[in-house]
Length: 353
Image 1: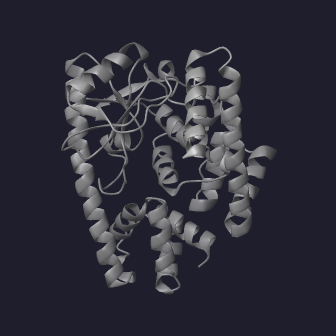
Image 2: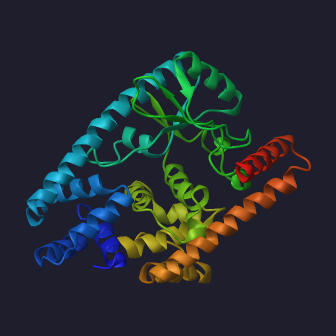
Image 3: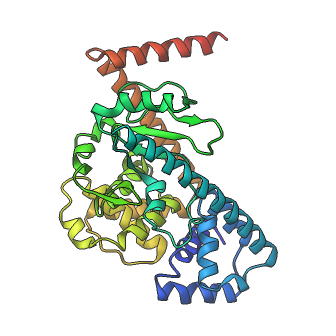
């Protein structure tokens, strides 16, 4: 199995309990004993979906087709992840109770939000990083102060004041770091989707505030395509694609796409590429730009040398774009002047060390 075949096998395997067609295809492939399990473990681990893969095989009763030692390995990883997620949920619950008690409404985001909403059949499916939540701008400084009083302390380097979230914080004996957001997207796009777009579109589950559907789906798509530069890199994360796939089942996709005023190409490009990756038919709009995105996506998967050169070039473009943006804005924004001075000082020290 080459990289593309491995990626598509994993993607389709994540849908087998929702898509009968893919369930038949994957079972046939498993029976043929043509699966390169070493490649599957490598790719699914890199994309943080190995526990989700195990849980889907388990539910579909497909574990009987896998090598016994592999099943034991996947089960052990999933059990550890489930245990970690249970601890993260307890931490998020404690955090939420504390903030609500101090009249701060935290809206939980990303993986922990999906976990709270029972998006997954098994709490062990989703591999989580930080606990992310957003508060209103008027409550942002208050929230940071409250968290420090509650025992949280900063573990990451300082970020510019205009950054969308405060540096990562952690509390002694807690398993997860937290990121307190005041914005949802990178600076260039935040006027188009921010706190004001979600504050009246919330649901309350287990006393947690979460973004309601379909804006929850919208945010998950934009995190990948905008914040993580997925649209620029022509890259799809299997973990994010799996989240989007499950969220799409809770949304009238046609209405959602018809009502899109912003981000039409990034959203539809993701869905179009994901449909190929998962062998699904989630509704999406099509145009020449979206087709070009899908064509490049396929070429990247088929050609490792092209993929490495393409992503290296895009990374360089992003870096230079950031530098030029900082330089221009430093002429009229103090926060950018402070950041520019720090960058110059850091490079000077590194050069002479």
